[in-house]
Amino acid sequence: MKAKWVIFAVLAAFFVLVAHSEAVNTKDIDTVRNKPVLESADLQIIDAFLNEATQELVNTRDFTSIAQTRSAILARSSSRKSSAQAQYGEQFFESAHKYISSSFKLAEQLTTEDHRYKVVLNLLILIDGLEDVRLADLALAFLKDKNTVIRYWAVHSIANPNFTKKLNSSKTANSQLASRIVEQLKSLVESAEGQNTKVLAMVAEFAAEADIPQSGELLGQIADMRIKRYANWSVNYELLDSTILKLLYNKITSGATNRRAIARRFGQLYSYAIQRYVKGRSYLNAAQKNQLASVLVETEKSIVSKILATPQTVIKRAVELEDYTRLLLEHSRLLGDETRAGELPQKLNFDYGTSPNSTGLTAPLVLPEPPQKPSTEE
Image (cartoon, rainbow, N blue to C red; front, side, top):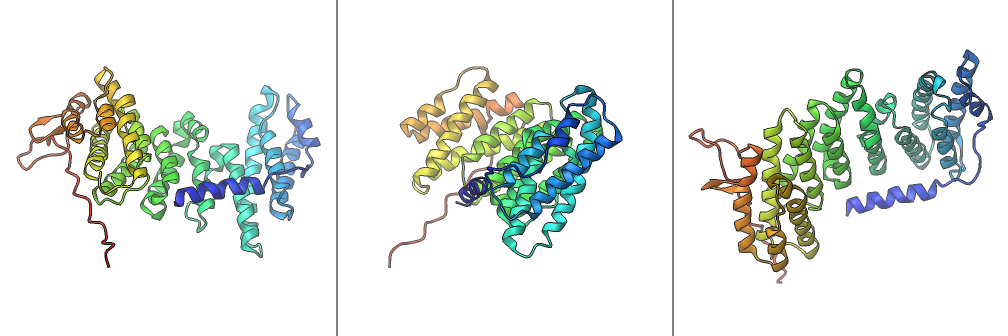
């Protein structure tokens, strides 16, 4: 329900902020964008443009014009001449950081919470659109904001795929920033925001794509949290685990340093999803069962079939026929039980931990029975 509210709020924000009129002068900056070589006066024009445009975002009371201002900034974030690209971009993002930073400070001094919210939201959407690592620290400051939509856009601006690619493109230069982002996202996952499946999905995507060792730890943390919630029957939006299982598999095949630990989490999460489907058949509602069914079937088709190098359809047929016995037998074949290792652990070279006699465990953890539903009787 919370995730649906976030989506609604985000869409509402876009509709409120649609623009219909020119809000900032672009004549001088457009001239500079067409110059093959820039002089000091041109750099001052870039700086003045960013100053004027960000002031417009803060000061305007006509919020129907803000999206136009954002679009004007985004459209002019690069030079049209390749020879001036580096020089233009350096000045543009230096000025963008300076004036967006000062705009956030001005927003804190606004007299109404609604005005402050709209200004901060638009600045974060601007940062998200600019997709530049030099602005990441400005977004990180809002990961713990009290407003759900503000937190959403703060995460989105540092977890969107294009930003992650730029972060990866210069690992040496960006390694400290990447580490700081991962550490702050770890804290976010541990907080109440970790319950927001929309945000969790973005963080998981970032963790899977970010090219630093700590990103595997972040993805593992998300998987551990989902596994824990399966174990205590508090997991929500099971469909998310189809994505998480794919990301875990991608991380395994990408040669991650903690490959075995990631594979173990993959096996346990998939096992719990299957066990929940079987043990919860009289406990879960129709939407939960349908989501779980999608997770089981999609994972079999897109991942298990790849690992075993042959199409797998047993789980799909068992789900269609509601054949829970067949489903459990397939679970044991693929994931293992007390008597034998499963085919997936053998292929991916993992176990489920160590037994008291120091041998590898071949069976995933058993999901507890579902809690009793509250009685509706008087």
